[in-house]
Length: 126
Image 1 (tube, helix red, strand yellow):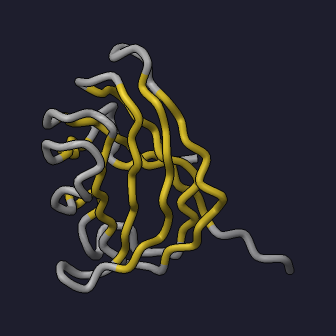
Image 2 (cartoon, helix red, strand yellow):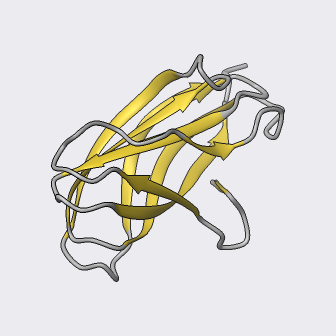
């Protein structure tokens, strides 16, 4: 399985203030025309979070303003130092698609998480 972004980098996604007040701005994770073959989104790795609490993350594909939801995952952060891996159920993504994400959460303050996506090739039976 490969990761995006590579080289132990991660992407920050911010949550709006207020308890479950909706999802913040969508943040680009994989730019359009970056992964040029069909792939399977296998997991979302939460590398860090600045606030303990319950979170929900939505992953989208498509151009800005025309995003469509791929998956919606819930998770808890009980220790700000721990990483969490969320299995995604093998969602197929078409070549060149832009991938973005947004979060919401149970805490009243603004907060943020850092993520990395795990992906792999689509295998076909011969």
